[in-house]
Amino acid sequence: MSARTVTSLANTTVKAVRALHLRKERDETGLFVAEGLKNVTEGVDLGHAPRILMHGRDADHPLLTQAIAATLAAGGEVIEVTQDILAKVSRRDNPQAVVGVFAQTFRPLAEVDPKAAPCFVALHRVRDPGNLGTIVRTADAAGCGGVILVGECCDPYSVEAVRATMGSIFAVPLTRASEAEFADWRKSWPGSVVGTLLSATVDHRGADYRKPALVLMGNEQQGLPPEMAALCDVAVKIPMRGRADSLNLSVATGIMIYAATG
Image: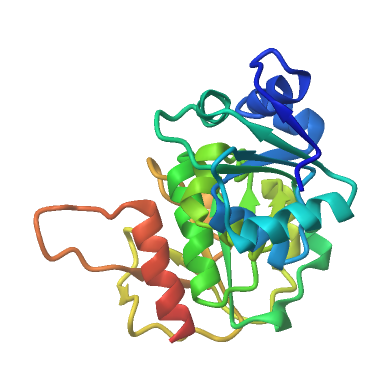
C-alpha cells in the first residue's frame, strides 16, 4: 500500500522530517514528529491523519495498514524507508518502525470551556520537555479538559515531549497564553484556581477544591512567582516527610491533579 520506497538520506522528504527536531522548523511548518505505531494509531483514532507516514520494510501490522489508509485518504505521503533512515529521523540507535508527521494543534484561550471537565492544568514557564509530556499524559489519564502553557514554555511538540505523552498529545487540548492574557482570562474562571506554595499552610488533601478546578503550577526551578501566586484563590502544600525538600514537577502536578479531581 506504500506510495513509494526511499533509501537515500538525501531525499527531500527525509531531510524535511529530520529537520523537525529543530523548534524553528516546527514553528515555521506547524508540524511535528510522532514515533511508534502506538502514537501514530492514537493520532489516527482521534482524527489526526499523518501528513507523512514512514515505515520500515519489515513493519507489518493491521494498525499500520489502517494508518497507511488514513494517510493516503487525507492526501498524505506514505514512504517505506530503510532502518538507517529511521535511525537518523528519530536520532535513536533502536528506532521505532513507524514514524508519523502531524499538524500541531493549539486551542485558543477564549475557546476553553470550564464546564467541559472537572479539572484543567496551567503551567507557567515549564522548561523540561519530559516533564511537560508526562503532565500531558497524566492530564489525559485523569480526564482533564486541557493544558494551558503560560509564558515562555518549552515546546510540547518537541520529539522528547511527544515521546513522554505516549500518544496523549492527540487527546489533550493544548493552549498557549502570555502571562497578561492568562491573568485577564482567569478572572472569569468559575471554580478554584489552585497552586502549590512554600508559604501555604493547607495540606493538598484537605483543601476545598471548587470544580472546575484549575491547577496552576510553576516551573522546575522557581515554582510560582508572586504575580502568578496572586492568581490562586487556593494555596496548598504537598508535605515532604523525608530528606528531599521538593518533588519533580510532573510528579507534583500529578498529585495535584488527582487531589483536585478526587
